[in-house]
Amino acid sequence: KVEAPKAKDAEPEKKKSPWLDAWHDPVAGMSCYSSFLCLADLVADGDHRLVMVDMKKRIRMYKGTTIQWEHKLPDVPCAVQAFYHEVGNPPIPTLAVASGHRVLIFRNMRPSMQYRLPPIEIDPVESQIWEEMG
Image (cartoon, rainbow, N blue to C red; front, side):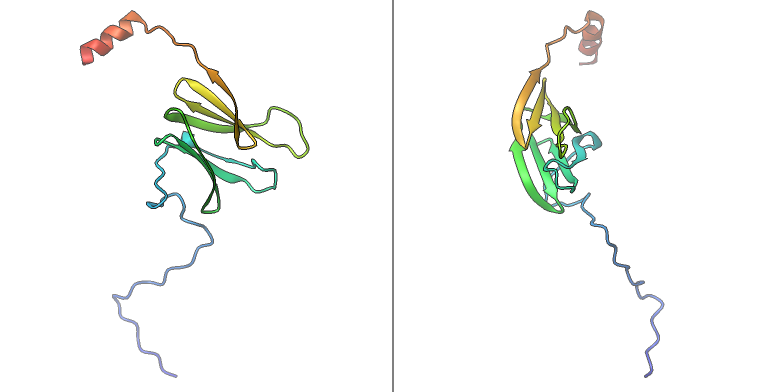
């Protein structure tokens, strides 16, 4: 069996990767920064899922490339993080979302608590600098 010689301009064969290119998906419609992401085993099944918040005031949990859970947020978020605050068997983390002037706490993928941050007075020197820039 004789094979035809390959042209010099032919594209090299692309190797198939076992990794998903899920960090860029224009169809997903999520726009976020690194503080908007975390991995957590929120259902205690040993599978750490991707948890994301975005500028459209939503929180989503992905299992693979499928949205497993979504919840609307009251304000634009600035961070999300999973943490363990109690001992359990199996241990199930709690999810904290910093959104606007609140820290929202989710347990078992349901809103559980919220902490409102008190307003702080702006230093007069800083206020003057901002006024001069505007």
